[in-house]
Image (tube, rainbow, N blue to C red; front, side):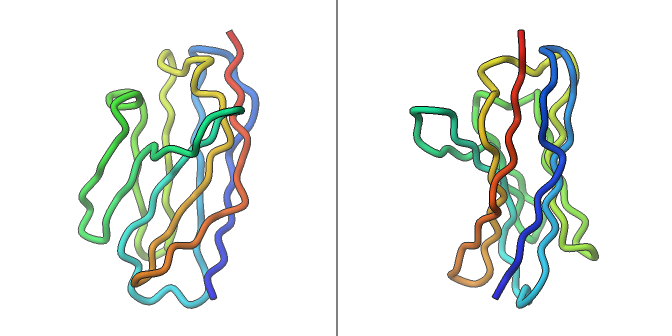
Amino acid sequence: QVQLVESGGGLVQAGGSLRLSCAASGSILGINSMGWYRQAPGKQRELVAQITSGGRTNYAESVKGRFTISRVTAKNTVYLQMNSLNLKPEDTAVYYCRVAVGFTAYWGQGTQVTVSS
């Protein structure tokens, strides 16, 4: 079993910045990828950013150049830096951490990010 603990969400004004963290523990040998998804009210959950075990990254078009995903392998932790001056009200959503171990995906409980204009 894999446990994911997310932190870093909150309320921020447009132009502010946030960093989300997700720490994985448990049966985590063989992590293939770690990433972040988000779900806004009335919308489907969507990929925000993903990083593979080899360090390759993939971003949604809507966040390219604004958000940065990174991971510290030794800590089994993935981060999502949402940069200042670039956060928009449309980034408001519940952000979920997702970790793929082998062929199984695990999800965090979600952390709310609210960007006010």
